[in-house]
Image 1 (tube, rainbow, N blue to C red):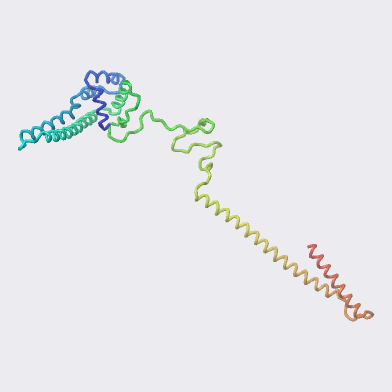
Image 2: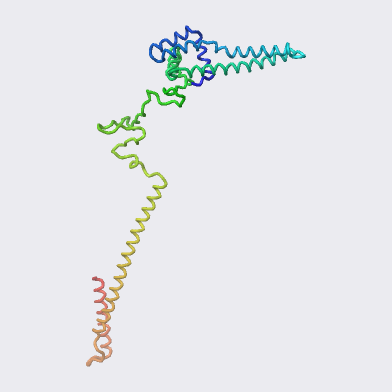
Length: 288
């Protein structure tokens, strides 16, 4: 506890006499909250005369200033100047007295056996006197006797798991390790937080887009390769079929100048044979 102005004022207003201090702290001693040493030290110090340090120091400073201006100053200070400098001296002296009183309380706190227990006892006294709020200015350190930062008290508990949207809190399965705050809270269906969480990060989205584009490109490239192979093969086959059909047509043409046929009839026969050959070739190509 760093005895500030509010802390010191509350202690001085509550523990005014030794009898009052014993009356208020006796229940804490009987309940084992504070030790016998701290009880005796508190009942002796709290009602002490250190509470009057601001008034004593302010009065002394004013008296010395007034005496200097009246008896030692030549020429003597006029009345307005005496009042002004006397008031300033009282303010300065009272402030110095406040510092001395706070220093006395700080030394008292350092001599306690268990500061945390004593602060809890003061909180209990505050509640018995009708106080409902917590004395926040009574900072409770850890029970290690040192001046370090406050540690978690014996009543500190681990954070409880939050209920789901239906108000049901998942119960631990027998044989499972207890859940701690450092571990991710288990989700329904056994899915972990990493599996259930959607990939909202820019890196995950970029990886998904790149993978999708790569797979799509592979499909297009494979289809083009297959189409190119099929079209090349079809072209070669059709070229071969046309060449063979032309040869067949030439073989089927009747020789020119057959006996008994005129030139016109021979030409018609050749055209008919060529036309039949072309039809046969187209039929073969269409039939595969």
